[in-house]
Length: 371
Ligand code: UDP
Image 1 (cartoon, rainbow, N blue to C red):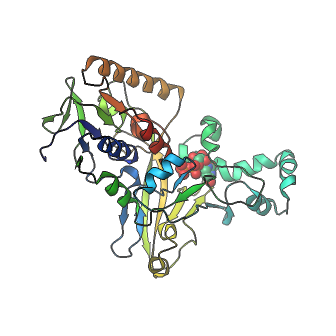
Image 2: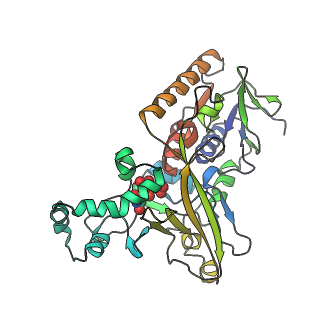
Image 3: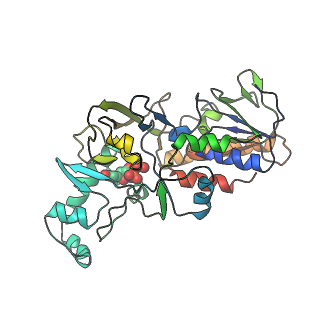
């Protein structure tokens, strides 16, 4: 390790950790960033396919979208976004519809030509909204969560907007896009600061009351941790539950496979939930767009077991109370350890906070962390 003065440790170099590291560095602290994986970027990490030049979102599609000015200003200090506007199509019984639930989808599904003011009344007729919901949400949700829609927190399905107009933008945020220079450059640039040293393939552990990495005990400084909170305590109360995803990537010798970046598959009988086709995230890149090949990825949600990649936290009364126990444990540890400013370990991000967060919410939370 490069010998340096360390004022703070950031463990986990996803979007939350990198934002915190950058803020610490700009506040004059010397920051050691530890990342368990061999590369930084967390699940936003991409791989540029050497053969086709296509930026593959290794952990599934990530579209940056936000209505929070401070978040947009922050990320735009490092990269310029291409203005990509996300649309999601969905395949139900072989026909393609535009999500979200709006006039385009409803009119096609029921073979009608409703006007905006007619949608509400039309869907109030018994059986119609149920038919719509069963077609587009029931099967997909069962595949995604391994549970029926009635068993999951309603806030999850409410992520998909319902509209009575022809707007087929998936997100309602004022700002969205994909970094022109690629997602990895966002992380590389955030961490490119004289006060930051990054160490990859370096996991943090909490052992005998001390924080360690490899054979080294960490200096007694504040730690900003975005690994799984239960892993920090060696799962002493049990594992927090997750849904995992498996991806199947395929390179095809066609210019355009599906004509758009994401097509969902609504029916329970189709084993995957969606197909991503990554070249569509860079419509500005004519060479990639026009090349006679493409990369697609099928996404298969699955039950999670220890050792699998954690993707979506499962919000139940049981998981909330387990999370509370780990948070209490963290509070105890913070009380027992001495440090200059009274903060010893701050947990955050998707894994550390056990949160189903969009990227902007992680950045927003990181911008608010008390340094
Ligand atoms: N959903 C659905 N059908 C769809 C898209 C979404 O049933 O075609 C439900 C599903 O339960 C999903 C939730 O809405 O988990 C949120 O969807 P979103 O697209 O926000 O999921 P993400 O991209 O975060 O996985």
